[in-house]
Amino acid sequence: MNTERTYAQFLDEQDDLLGFRDEFHLPYGTIYFDGNSLGLLSKQAADSLEKLLDSWKRHAIDGWTEDVEPWFYLSEKLGKMTAPLVGARMEEVIVTGSTTTNLHQLVSSFYKPHGKKTKILADALNFPSDIYALKSQLKLKGYDPNEHLIQVQSSDGNTLNTADIIKAMTDDVALIMLPGVLYRSGQILDMKTLTREAHKRGIVIGFDLCHSIGSIPHHLSDWGVDFAFWCNYKHLNGGPGCVAGLYVNKKHFGNEPGLAGWFSSSKETQFDMSHTLTAAEDAGAYQIGTPHVLSAAPLLGSLKVFQEAGIDRVRNKSLQLTKYMMELIEVELKDYQFTIANPKDDAVRGGHIYLEHTEAARICKALKADKVIPDFRTPNGIRLAPVALYNTFEEVWETVQILKTIMQEERYKKYENKRGVIA
Ligand SMILES: *Cc1c(COP(=O)(O)O)cnc(C)c1O
Image (cartoon, rainbow, N blue to C red; front, side, top):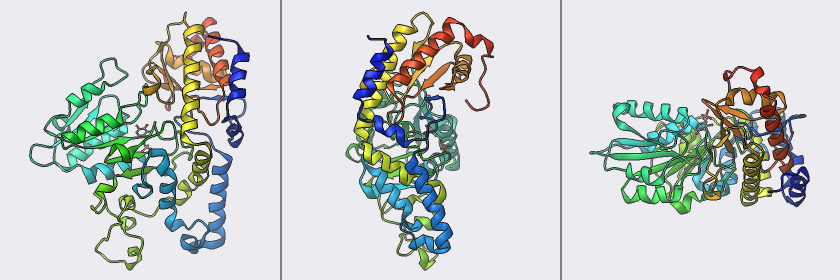
């Protein structure tokens, strides 16, 4: 292991994605390793938002149809642009809603308890919003979540075992909802195998791709996944509160959405204003109301950046960055009781590093004081996401050096070991 700064610089020189760094607005004087919580603004995204504002100025109501980017078809267009990132057919993806509302939409459409199949299978490590939503979906159908929500447990507190999940696919399960990449440990679940095993047992399966989209390639259509959803403000850099996305496998087209609205309509009949819905014959049917056009506009630019870079190159560099970071941590921080709690294997390691330490909350504060932006995950986790499109190997090197100094000089002791309101 070469621990010299010059080696990091050498790796940056070899990096064919390095040019993309200039496409982004980097927070001045900081090393930003939080792109898995809120991705940075690209110049192309800023430009597409400004163009949209300009079209509102110039066209007013006619912007729905007359703009070069007619707002009426924007959700569909962005869906097509997103499709390659999830490995779906273009008509299987739509940009709409938020992660949590899309979960509600899809579970209300796909969860059809019948006979003894009444339960929903999830996991014990997922993000709280997903679990709250699943419990409320059960209650809406008249079921007690304490009995009808099964959460597969983790044996080490950070990762899930494929065999344990498959074992939990019992006869009484109607629907399975799992993350593609776990938000804390960054573990990639084996979506292909899980889908195959669910289908063998007649169970519908969907994934939350919040932490996997824009970070790893997916093949949802080939795997036969029934549905999926994600946010666009993490690795996809669509901006705070950006409109989210969803995928529905073509084999389910033609069904009515669980939560209908006039934007569920086929485009041709929407303005007939009939009280009988003719739902769109593609993923567009899962839209509800008028799209949040201004919050979707940055995606036009940021998805273009992904088209130019290509998700395979992004993944390849991401793996190199996280591997390099783990190797440096193992050498440089060996005396300071950090545990690398993300999976180390390339096949199951997502786009961020997850360190555990009993002083994690205040180590994060010390990092921020030194202009490195991590995020803290309660109770004892530090997430560091070196993002392929805008972070460098030298930033990884510097961060590990800064962490080492913080530990050597016990600088974290200046702070309370407690999280802030947002952490
Ligand atoms: C980020 C994230 C969310 C956020 O949901 P919103 O509706 O966008 O607030 C939900 N689930 C997971 C797994 C996430 O990582």
